[in-house]
Length: 135
Image (tube, rainbow, N blue to C red; front, side, top):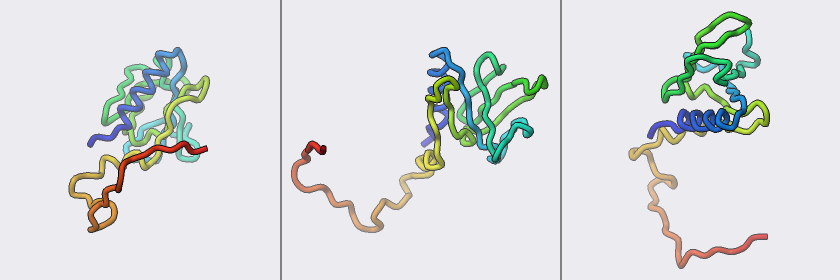
């Protein structure tokens, strides 16, 4: 399956913009093929304002996040793969989504992968399912 990260990035971005808030993106600048202004990288990460007022030609595709922006008055083309995005959130309230490395594991699983538990067949649950209240 395709990674869900690019789809989630687009959805959270749209929700933040539709709410009239400012979308910020936390990026791992150490991932291969990340092109960002190096003078703003701190601890291998960079925070980018990707609001419609701050960027031009924003493209959020399954393969790339790309846009043009001005940094200290100098125009620069920014590009990065979606797997470099660590979080996307609203500046004003911090609401959004944080991604972890485990988010990408679903794209590596396939029909040839070994099922959990090794060679043993799965044991079906016995009896009828039931719910109980836990306090």
